Each structure stands twice: as structure tokens, then as C-alpha cells.
Length: 262
Image (tube, rainbow, N blue to C red):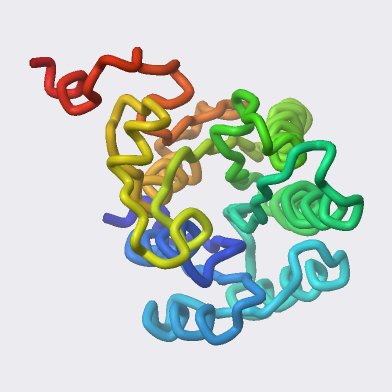
């Protein structure tokens, strides 16, 4: 316990799914957490359940003025910003021929421009403090391509690239920047009805772990990279994907047999 004790973390997309799990975990580990989301009812509920260590701010992550407000309110609330977790994102399943310019621009605004604006907003405070940690939640799709998701993949590859570039730019300031790459995680984005057969999906996709990941498993990886335990890690990418990015099981292999070693 206490792995981020006394630190202040801004977490986007925190009203549900991975962001909610991350906010709850960080608070349990001693951080003051500022939850950012457009889902006001869910975000306020999560902050209330966490308690005094949490505050919810309804904001659009793609808005520069909203980020100025978020950081100002955070400084007013707790006096500093130690950690930024850029988790908010949209997904998309359209071929390049099908996707509209409006949809492409929306994806870019939330998945890439939003995290860049967020980092621009917190960096002056992190520099003044002498350090900080930024964790950008990319995707397994930021490590390889997926047919029918070219626009989404573009945003996640770009976020991975920005993370590496900023790790180089900011190392001398004591600011670490890393990326996390979730695979099939049971969140409302992947499974809005809560009825998805995760085992069947993972068998179809030939994912070694043979099951969906849970939001807390992404939160655990994010916590590690945000904590002082990762003090010598910057510019890294951590896949939380059940082995998906490692390669594919051959079709005849049963994932449960593969994992158990039988």
C-alpha cells in the first residue's frame, strides 16, 4: 500500500472501465485523484464512492480551454500535479474507404490531440515541481495493425510515438513518459451489454491467455509506471494484452492447454 502516497493524479476517461479502475486503485494507494470525463453522472458517482481523496471534473479532453480549467482546478484543490494518465479514448471499426472525415477528426481530437493538450497543460507545473510521471494509454493496436481499424490504429501509433519523443525531451526535467497497450479488456467500450463471451472471442483471435483482461489489470500496469518503482523507466511501452502482441497461437492449439503447460 501507499505506492503513490501523497501524489496527485489527473486521470481522464475515469467515469468507468479502465479509467475508473485506475482512479480507485491510485486512491487506495494513497493518491489524491482528479477524475475527468464527459459522463457526469457516472464520474460524480465514482468520485463520491472513492471519498475525500477524489474530485470529479466534467470536461472535454479535446478542448484546450477545458484543460486550462482542469489544471487550475486541480492546483486549487490539491496544490500540485504529479501524475497524468491519458486514458480517455474513442474506438472505431471502419475501413479506410468507409470512414468519414468528421469521424476521423473526432478520433484524432480525443485519442491524440487530447493527450497532447493535457501534457502541455501539466508540464509547466511538473517542471516547477522538479518531476512527474505521464502514462499514455495507447492500445495493442498501437503495436501492430488491425484490418478495419486503420484510423483508430493511426491515433494509437501516434500516441505511442509522442510518448517516446517526450520521454527524450523531458528526461532532464525529471518527467517520465511511458505508454500502456491494453488488449481485449472487459470494459463498456468492448462489451457494452456485459454479455460478451470472452473465452470464445479470445479463441477466435488466438490470444494466448485465453480470456479477456480486467480493467484492474491495466490499472496495475499504469500504477507501476506512475510510481517511484519505475523511476528508471521512461520511453517504454508495456503491453497488457494476454500475449496478443507476442504473436498468434496456431489454430489447433487450445489456449488453456497452452497456458497450463499440459
